[in-house]
Length: 448
Image (cartoon, rainbow, N blue to C red; front, side, top):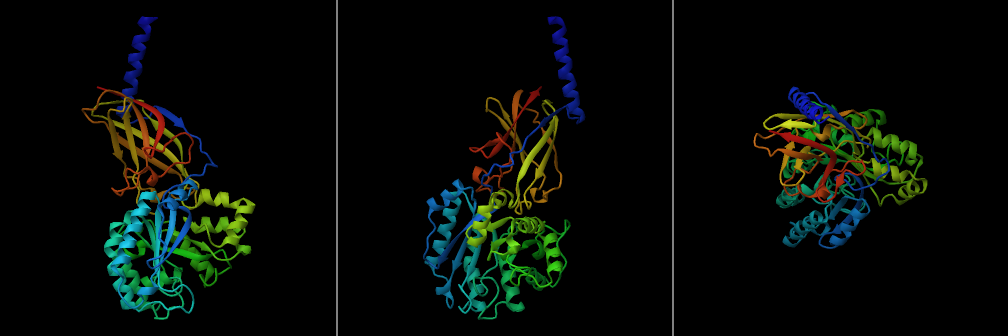
Protein backbone atom coordinates (compact mmCIF):
# COMPACT_ATOMS: atom_id res chain seq x y z
CA UNK A 1 0.00 0.00 0.00
CA UNK A 2 2.81 2.41 0.79
CA UNK A 3 4.40 1.83 -2.59
CA UNK A 4 1.12 2.68 -4.31
CA UNK A 5 0.29 5.79 -2.27
CA UNK A 6 3.52 7.68 -2.98
CA UNK A 7 3.27 7.57 -6.80
CA UNK A 8 -0.40 8.58 -6.54
CA UNK A 9 0.48 11.63 -4.45
CA UNK A 10 3.20 12.57 -6.90
CA UNK A 11 0.80 12.11 -9.81
CA UNK A 12 -1.81 14.33 -8.10
CA UNK A 13 0.74 17.09 -7.53
CA UNK A 14 1.88 16.90 -11.15
CA UNK A 15 -1.73 17.16 -12.37
CA UNK A 16 -2.43 20.16 -10.13
CA UNK A 17 0.69 21.93 -11.31
CA UNK A 18 -0.17 21.15 -14.92
CA UNK A 19 -3.66 22.58 -14.44
CA UNK A 20 -2.19 25.70 -12.86
CA UNK A 21 0.23 26.15 -15.74
CA UNK A 22 -2.58 25.75 -18.28
CA UNK A 23 -4.83 28.24 -16.53
CA UNK A 24 -7.52 25.65 -15.72
CA UNK A 25 -9.17 25.89 -12.32
CA UNK A 26 -9.31 22.60 -10.47
CA UNK A 27 -11.09 23.55 -7.23
CA UNK A 28 -14.19 25.53 -6.31
CA UNK A 29 -15.47 26.83 -2.99
CA UNK A 30 -18.97 28.15 -2.40
CA UNK A 31 -19.91 30.85 0.11
CA UNK A 32 -23.17 31.67 1.85
CA UNK A 33 -24.51 35.21 2.35
CA UNK A 34 -25.77 36.60 5.64
CA UNK A 35 -28.86 38.46 4.49
CA UNK A 36 -29.62 40.01 7.90
CA UNK A 37 -26.15 41.02 9.11
CA UNK A 38 -25.89 44.79 9.68
CA UNK A 39 -22.46 46.42 9.88
CA UNK A 40 -20.86 49.74 8.90
CA UNK A 41 -19.35 50.10 5.45
CA UNK A 42 -17.67 53.24 4.09
CA UNK A 43 -19.44 55.95 2.07
CA UNK A 44 -22.93 54.46 2.30
CA UNK A 45 -25.93 53.98 4.56
CA UNK A 46 -27.91 56.13 6.95
CA UNK A 47 -25.99 59.23 7.98
CA UNK A 48 -26.12 61.50 11.01
CA UNK A 49 -26.04 65.27 10.48
CA UNK A 50 -23.78 67.53 12.53
CA UNK A 51 -24.46 71.23 12.02
CA UNK A 52 -22.04 73.98 12.96
CA UNK A 53 -22.82 77.69 13.27
CA UNK A 54 -19.50 79.24 12.24
CA UNK A 55 -17.04 78.58 15.08
CA UNK A 56 -19.61 76.99 17.41
CA UNK A 57 -20.94 73.41 17.67
CA UNK A 58 -17.73 71.39 17.85
CA UNK A 59 -17.41 67.81 16.66
CA UNK A 60 -16.77 65.44 19.55
CA UNK A 61 -14.59 62.42 18.81
CA UNK A 62 -16.52 60.15 21.16
CA UNK A 63 -19.81 61.03 19.45
CA UNK A 64 -18.45 60.01 16.07
CA UNK A 65 -16.84 56.86 17.42
CA UNK A 66 -20.15 55.80 18.97
CA UNK A 67 -21.81 55.99 15.55
CA UNK A 68 -19.81 53.05 14.29
CA UNK A 69 -21.26 50.99 17.13
CA UNK A 70 -24.66 51.87 15.65
CA UNK A 71 -23.43 50.77 12.19
CA UNK A 72 -23.22 54.35 10.92
CA UNK A 73 -20.07 55.26 8.99
CA UNK A 74 -21.17 58.50 7.33
CA UNK A 75 -21.99 61.98 8.60
CA UNK A 76 -23.16 65.15 6.93
CA UNK A 77 -21.05 68.06 8.14
CA UNK A 78 -23.03 71.25 7.61
CA UNK A 79 -21.30 74.60 8.09
CA UNK A 80 -23.35 77.80 8.30
CA UNK A 81 -21.01 80.72 7.61
CA UNK A 82 -23.45 83.48 8.60
CA UNK A 83 -20.86 85.63 10.33
CA UNK A 84 -18.74 85.70 7.18
CA UNK A 85 -21.35 86.84 4.65
CA UNK A 86 -19.40 90.03 3.99
CA UNK A 87 -15.80 89.15 4.85
CA UNK A 88 -13.15 86.45 4.53
CA UNK A 89 -13.16 83.38 6.72
CA UNK A 90 -11.10 83.93 9.82
CA UNK A 91 -7.95 81.95 10.53
CA UNK A 92 -9.71 80.59 13.60
CA UNK A 93 -12.57 79.28 11.46
CA UNK A 94 -10.19 77.64 8.98
CA UNK A 95 -8.24 76.02 11.80
CA UNK A 96 -11.46 74.66 13.31
CA UNK A 97 -12.49 73.10 10.00
CA UNK A 98 -9.06 71.50 9.62
CA UNK A 99 -9.20 70.14 13.17
CA UNK A 100 -12.66 68.68 12.58
CA UNK A 101 -11.38 66.75 9.60
CA UNK A 102 -8.71 65.23 11.85
CA UNK A 103 -11.45 64.15 14.28
CA UNK A 104 -13.50 62.63 11.45
CA UNK A 105 -10.48 60.62 10.32
CA UNK A 106 -9.59 59.47 13.83
CA UNK A 107 -13.16 58.31 14.37
CA UNK A 108 -13.07 56.12 11.26
CA UNK A 109 -15.98 57.78 9.44
CA UNK A 110 -16.36 59.92 6.32
CA UNK A 111 -18.40 63.03 5.65
CA UNK A 112 -20.75 64.51 3.13
CA UNK A 113 -19.86 68.21 3.14
CA UNK A 114 -22.02 71.30 2.67
CA UNK A 115 -21.55 75.03 3.31
CA UNK A 116 -24.33 77.63 3.45
CA UNK A 117 -25.02 81.14 4.68
CA UNK A 118 -28.80 80.97 5.10
CA UNK A 119 -30.72 78.72 7.45
CA UNK A 120 -34.16 79.53 6.09
CA UNK A 121 -36.15 81.35 3.43
CA UNK A 122 -35.68 85.09 3.89
CA UNK A 123 -32.22 84.82 5.45
CA UNK A 124 -29.47 86.28 3.24
CA UNK A 125 -26.75 84.30 1.55
CA UNK A 126 -23.56 86.02 0.31
CA UNK A 127 -22.46 87.83 -2.86
CA UNK A 128 -20.71 85.74 -5.48
CA UNK A 129 -17.30 87.32 -4.89
CA UNK A 130 -17.48 86.40 -1.19
CA UNK A 131 -18.46 82.83 -2.02
CA UNK A 132 -15.60 82.36 -4.46
CA UNK A 133 -13.11 83.90 -2.03
CA UNK A 134 -14.28 81.54 0.72
CA UNK A 135 -13.81 78.60 -1.65
CA UNK A 136 -10.26 79.77 -2.37
CA UNK A 137 -9.57 79.90 1.35
CA UNK A 138 -10.99 76.40 1.86
CA UNK A 139 -9.09 74.83 -1.05
CA UNK A 140 -5.90 73.69 0.74
CA UNK A 141 -7.90 72.26 3.65
CA UNK A 142 -10.32 70.34 1.45
CA UNK A 143 -7.60 68.96 -0.78
CA UNK A 144 -5.58 67.83 2.23
CA UNK A 145 -8.61 66.06 3.69
CA UNK A 146 -10.31 64.69 0.59
CA UNK A 147 -9.58 61.17 1.85
CA UNK A 148 -12.42 61.50 4.40
CA UNK A 149 -14.81 63.41 2.12
CA UNK A 150 -17.29 61.01 0.57
CA UNK A 151 -18.84 63.68 -1.65
CA UNK A 152 -19.69 67.40 -1.51
CA UNK A 153 -23.13 68.96 -1.85
CA UNK A 154 -22.60 72.18 -3.78
CA UNK A 155 -24.45 74.26 -1.20
CA UNK A 156 -23.66 77.98 -0.65
CA UNK A 157 -26.73 79.14 -2.62
CA UNK A 158 -29.93 80.23 -0.87
CA UNK A 159 -31.83 78.69 2.02
CA UNK A 160 -29.96 75.77 3.60
CA UNK A 161 -27.60 75.83 0.61
CA UNK A 162 -30.33 74.04 -1.40
CA UNK A 163 -30.20 76.37 -4.40
CA UNK A 164 -33.41 78.33 -3.93
CA UNK A 165 -34.41 81.62 -2.29
CA UNK A 166 -31.03 83.25 -2.89
CA UNK A 167 -30.89 86.93 -1.89
CA UNK A 168 -27.87 87.52 -4.13
CA UNK A 169 -29.05 85.87 -7.35
CA UNK A 170 -26.60 83.02 -6.80
CA UNK A 171 -28.91 80.52 -8.51
CA UNK A 172 -28.78 82.47 -11.78
CA UNK A 173 -26.87 80.46 -14.42
CA UNK A 174 -23.83 82.76 -14.55
CA UNK A 175 -23.26 82.62 -10.80
CA UNK A 176 -24.28 78.99 -10.34
CA UNK A 177 -21.86 77.84 -13.03
CA UNK A 178 -19.01 79.73 -11.35
CA UNK A 179 -19.69 77.97 -8.05
CA UNK A 180 -19.93 74.48 -9.56
CA UNK A 181 -16.83 74.84 -11.71
CA UNK A 182 -14.99 76.33 -8.76
CA UNK A 183 -15.91 73.25 -6.70
CA UNK A 184 -14.54 70.98 -9.43
CA UNK A 185 -11.28 72.93 -9.32
CA UNK A 186 -11.09 72.95 -5.52
CA UNK A 187 -11.57 69.20 -5.08
CA UNK A 188 -9.21 66.48 -6.32
CA UNK A 189 -10.35 64.84 -9.54
CA UNK A 190 -11.45 61.65 -7.78
CA UNK A 191 -14.12 63.48 -5.77
CA UNK A 192 -17.63 64.46 -6.86
CA UNK A 193 -20.06 67.26 -6.14
CA UNK A 194 -23.85 66.92 -5.99
CA UNK A 195 -26.60 69.16 -7.28
CA UNK A 196 -30.11 69.44 -5.88
CA UNK A 197 -32.14 68.75 -9.05
CA UNK A 198 -31.41 67.16 -12.44
CA UNK A 199 -32.38 70.41 -14.18
CA UNK A 200 -29.52 72.16 -12.42
CA UNK A 201 -27.02 69.76 -13.98
CA UNK A 202 -28.62 70.35 -17.36
CA UNK A 203 -28.22 74.08 -16.84
CA UNK A 204 -24.60 73.82 -15.71
CA UNK A 205 -23.55 71.58 -18.61
CA UNK A 206 -25.95 72.84 -21.29
CA UNK A 207 -26.88 69.24 -22.12
CA UNK A 208 -29.48 66.67 -21.06
CA UNK A 209 -27.41 63.68 -22.15
CA UNK A 210 -26.83 61.32 -19.20
CA UNK A 211 -23.58 59.58 -18.43
CA UNK A 212 -22.91 56.14 -19.83
CA UNK A 213 -20.17 53.56 -19.35
CA UNK A 214 -17.95 55.32 -21.87
CA UNK A 215 -18.18 58.77 -20.27
CA UNK A 216 -18.27 57.75 -16.59
CA UNK A 217 -15.36 58.27 -14.17
CA UNK A 218 -13.46 60.61 -16.44
CA UNK A 219 -12.07 63.87 -15.13
CA UNK A 220 -14.87 65.85 -16.77
CA UNK A 221 -17.57 68.02 -15.20
CA UNK A 222 -20.30 65.63 -16.33
CA UNK A 223 -18.59 62.63 -14.71
CA UNK A 224 -17.99 64.48 -11.43
CA UNK A 225 -21.45 65.96 -10.82
CA UNK A 226 -23.88 63.75 -8.92
CA UNK A 227 -27.27 64.36 -7.35
CA UNK A 228 -29.03 64.78 -4.01
CA UNK A 229 -32.73 65.05 -3.20
CA UNK A 230 -33.61 66.73 0.09
CA UNK A 231 -37.37 66.21 -0.24
CA UNK A 232 -37.26 62.56 -1.25
CA UNK A 233 -40.56 60.62 -1.29
CA UNK A 234 -42.65 63.62 -0.19
CA UNK A 235 -44.90 64.01 -3.27
CA UNK A 236 -45.05 63.12 -6.95
CA UNK A 237 -42.65 65.98 -7.73
CA UNK A 238 -40.81 65.81 -4.39
CA UNK A 239 -41.87 69.42 -3.74
CA UNK A 240 -40.50 70.80 -6.99
CA UNK A 241 -37.47 68.55 -7.33
CA UNK A 242 -39.01 67.33 -10.59
CA UNK A 243 -41.02 69.12 -13.27
CA UNK A 244 -41.11 66.58 -16.10
CA UNK A 245 -41.18 63.61 -13.74
CA UNK A 246 -40.75 60.74 -16.18
CA UNK A 247 -38.01 62.43 -18.21
CA UNK A 248 -36.03 63.56 -15.18
CA UNK A 249 -36.26 60.23 -13.35
CA UNK A 250 -35.22 58.37 -16.49
CA UNK A 251 -32.21 60.67 -16.69
CA UNK A 252 -31.37 60.12 -13.01
CA UNK A 253 -31.72 56.36 -13.34
CA UNK A 254 -29.02 56.41 -16.02
CA UNK A 255 -26.80 58.98 -14.26
CA UNK A 256 -26.78 57.42 -10.81
CA UNK A 257 -25.24 54.22 -12.07
CA UNK A 258 -22.03 56.27 -12.18
CA UNK A 259 -22.33 59.19 -9.73
CA UNK A 260 -23.56 59.35 -6.12
CA UNK A 261 -27.21 59.87 -5.22
CA UNK A 262 -28.50 60.53 -1.71
CA UNK A 263 -30.49 62.95 0.39
CA UNK A 264 -33.20 63.09 2.99
CA UNK A 265 -36.96 62.80 3.28
CA UNK A 266 -38.97 65.88 4.24
CA UNK A 267 -42.55 64.76 4.93
CA UNK A 268 -44.50 61.58 5.55
CA UNK A 269 -46.70 60.84 2.54
CA UNK A 270 -48.20 58.03 0.53
CA UNK A 271 -45.01 58.15 -1.54
CA UNK A 272 -42.90 57.24 1.50
CA UNK A 273 -44.65 53.91 2.04
CA UNK A 274 -42.23 50.97 1.83
CA UNK A 275 -43.24 49.59 -1.58
CA UNK A 276 -42.79 52.91 -3.34
CA UNK A 277 -39.73 53.89 -1.28
CA UNK A 278 -37.99 50.61 -2.15
CA UNK A 279 -38.78 51.07 -5.85
CA UNK A 280 -37.51 54.66 -5.86
CA UNK A 281 -34.29 53.88 -3.99
CA UNK A 282 -33.51 51.05 -6.40
CA UNK A 283 -34.43 53.03 -9.51
CA UNK A 284 -32.36 56.06 -8.48
CA UNK A 285 -29.48 54.06 -6.94
CA UNK A 286 -29.59 55.70 -3.51
CA UNK A 287 -26.37 55.45 -1.49
CA UNK A 288 -27.30 57.44 1.61
CA UNK A 289 -30.18 58.98 3.57
CA UNK A 290 -30.49 61.16 6.65
CA UNK A 291 -31.23 59.08 9.75
CA UNK A 292 -32.62 62.10 11.57
CA UNK A 293 -34.93 63.65 8.97
CA UNK A 294 -37.79 63.56 8.44
CA UNK A 295 -38.54 61.91 11.82
CA UNK A 296 -42.12 61.03 10.83
CA UNK A 297 -40.83 59.02 7.86
CA UNK A 298 -37.96 57.39 9.74
CA UNK A 299 -40.19 56.46 12.69
CA UNK A 300 -42.84 55.00 10.39
CA UNK A 301 -40.19 52.87 8.69
CA UNK A 302 -38.89 51.80 12.08
CA UNK A 303 -42.39 50.80 13.20
CA UNK A 304 -43.22 48.80 10.08
CA UNK A 305 -39.79 47.16 9.86
CA UNK A 306 -38.76 48.74 6.56
CA UNK A 307 -35.92 50.69 8.19
CA UNK A 308 -34.01 47.44 8.70
CA UNK A 309 -34.06 46.82 4.96
CA UNK A 310 -33.01 50.41 4.22
CA UNK A 311 -30.04 50.06 6.56
CA UNK A 312 -28.83 46.98 4.71
CA UNK A 313 -29.46 48.08 1.13
CA UNK A 314 -28.52 51.76 0.88
CA UNK A 315 -25.49 51.96 -1.38
CA UNK A 316 -23.73 48.66 -2.07
CA UNK A 317 -24.09 45.31 -0.27
CA UNK A 318 -21.55 42.88 -1.66
CA UNK A 319 -21.48 39.15 -1.09
CA UNK A 320 -19.00 36.54 -2.28
CA UNK A 321 -20.69 33.60 -4.02
CA UNK A 322 -17.83 31.36 -5.11
CA UNK A 323 -14.14 31.07 -5.94
CA UNK A 324 -12.53 28.83 -8.52
CA UNK A 325 -8.82 28.30 -8.06
CA UNK A 326 -5.90 25.91 -8.20
CA UNK A 327 -4.55 24.44 -5.03
CA UNK A 328 -0.92 24.58 -6.13
CA UNK A 329 1.39 27.01 -7.90
CA UNK A 330 5.06 27.03 -8.83
CA UNK A 331 7.67 29.69 -8.16
CA UNK A 332 7.82 32.15 -11.04
CA UNK A 333 4.52 30.96 -12.51
CA UNK A 334 0.98 32.38 -12.46
CA UNK A 335 -1.99 31.39 -10.33
CA UNK A 336 -5.40 32.01 -11.94
CA UNK A 337 -8.35 32.68 -9.65
CA UNK A 338 -11.96 33.45 -10.53
CA UNK A 339 -14.38 35.03 -8.04
CA UNK A 340 -18.14 35.48 -8.36
CA UNK A 341 -19.88 38.18 -6.29
CA UNK A 342 -23.32 39.77 -6.01
CA UNK A 343 -24.53 43.26 -5.09
CA UNK A 344 -27.94 43.29 -3.40
CA UNK A 345 -27.78 46.97 -2.46
CA UNK A 346 -29.34 49.88 -4.32
CA UNK A 347 -26.10 51.22 -5.86
CA UNK A 348 -22.47 50.53 -6.65
CA UNK A 349 -19.60 52.15 -4.75
CA UNK A 350 -19.13 55.65 -6.18
CA UNK A 351 -15.54 56.44 -5.20
CA UNK A 352 -12.37 54.60 -6.33
CA UNK A 353 -11.60 51.40 -4.46
CA UNK A 354 -8.79 48.82 -4.61
CA UNK A 355 -9.40 45.09 -5.07
CA UNK A 356 -6.60 42.94 -3.68
CA UNK A 357 -5.85 39.24 -3.39
CA UNK A 358 -3.25 38.42 -0.75
CA UNK A 359 -1.30 35.23 -0.19
CA UNK A 360 -0.10 34.93 3.41
CA UNK A 361 2.32 32.24 4.54
CA UNK A 362 0.70 30.15 7.24
CA UNK A 363 3.48 31.09 9.62
CA UNK A 364 2.71 34.76 8.72
CA UNK A 365 6.34 35.33 7.75
CA UNK A 366 5.60 36.31 4.14
CA UNK A 367 2.75 37.80 2.17
CA UNK A 368 2.27 38.63 -1.50
CA UNK A 369 -0.33 41.22 -2.47
CA UNK A 370 -1.77 41.57 -5.95
CA UNK A 371 -3.81 44.70 -6.68
CA UNK A 372 -6.26 43.83 -9.44
CA UNK A 373 -7.46 46.12 -12.25
CA UNK A 374 -11.12 45.54 -11.39
CA UNK A 375 -13.13 48.66 -10.48
CA UNK A 376 -15.90 48.18 -7.86
CA UNK A 377 -17.66 51.27 -9.22
CA UNK A 378 -18.81 48.99 -12.06
CA UNK A 379 -20.42 46.51 -9.65
CA UNK A 380 -24.02 47.54 -10.15
CA UNK A 381 -26.88 45.82 -8.32
CA UNK A 382 -28.40 42.71 -9.85
CA UNK A 383 -25.59 42.37 -12.39
CA UNK A 384 -23.25 39.36 -12.24
CA UNK A 385 -19.85 40.36 -10.88
CA UNK A 386 -16.90 38.24 -12.00
CA UNK A 387 -13.27 38.83 -11.14
CA UNK A 388 -10.82 36.87 -13.27
CA UNK A 389 -7.47 37.36 -11.59
CA UNK A 390 -3.96 36.22 -12.31
CA UNK A 391 -1.50 36.19 -9.43
CA UNK A 392 2.16 36.24 -10.36
CA UNK A 393 4.10 34.02 -7.99
CA UNK A 394 7.56 35.54 -7.45
CA UNK A 395 10.51 33.38 -8.60
CA UNK A 396 11.95 33.62 -5.11
CA UNK A 397 8.69 32.90 -3.29
CA UNK A 398 9.21 30.77 -0.23
CA UNK A 399 7.81 27.27 -0.81
CA UNK A 400 5.03 26.24 1.53
CA UNK A 401 1.37 26.65 2.33
CA UNK A 402 -0.33 30.03 1.96
CA UNK A 403 -3.76 31.28 2.98
CA UNK A 404 -5.74 33.36 0.50
CA UNK A 405 -7.32 36.68 1.53
CA UNK A 406 -9.50 39.21 -0.31
CA UNK A 407 -9.38 42.92 0.57
CA UNK A 408 -11.19 46.02 -0.68
CA UNK A 409 -9.19 48.83 0.96
CA UNK A 410 -9.53 52.56 0.47
CA UNK A 411 -6.94 53.63 -2.14
CA UNK A 412 -5.93 56.75 -0.21
CA UNK A 413 -2.52 56.15 1.42
CA UNK A 414 -3.74 57.69 4.68
CA UNK A 415 -6.57 55.15 4.91
CA UNK A 416 -5.27 52.09 3.05
CA UNK A 417 -4.33 50.29 6.25
CA UNK A 418 -7.38 51.39 8.24
CA UNK A 419 -9.88 48.48 8.46
CA UNK A 420 -12.72 50.96 9.19
CA UNK A 421 -12.32 52.27 5.64
CA UNK A 422 -12.20 48.87 3.90
CA UNK A 423 -15.34 47.39 2.37
CA UNK A 424 -16.70 44.38 4.23
CA UNK A 425 -18.55 41.60 2.43
CA UNK A 426 -21.93 40.38 3.69
CA UNK A 427 -20.72 36.83 4.32
CA UNK A 428 -20.38 35.25 7.76
CA UNK A 429 -17.03 34.25 9.24
CA UNK A 430 -14.77 35.87 6.62
CA UNK A 431 -14.11 39.38 7.95
CA UNK A 432 -11.02 40.14 10.03
CA UNK A 433 -11.76 43.41 11.84
CA UNK A 434 -8.09 43.87 12.74
CA UNK A 435 -6.84 43.84 9.15
CA UNK A 436 -9.89 44.76 7.06
CA UNK A 437 -9.37 41.60 5.01
CA UNK A 438 -11.46 38.50 4.30
CA UNK A 439 -9.98 35.10 5.12
CA UNK A 440 -11.32 32.90 2.35
CA UNK A 441 -10.41 29.68 4.09
CA UNK A 442 -8.38 28.51 1.10
CA UNK A 443 -4.87 27.07 1.16
CA UNK A 444 -2.48 27.37 -1.79
CA UNK A 445 0.66 25.24 -1.96
CA UNK A 446 3.64 27.02 -3.53
CA UNK A 447 6.39 24.70 -4.76
CA UNK A 448 9.76 25.08 -6.40
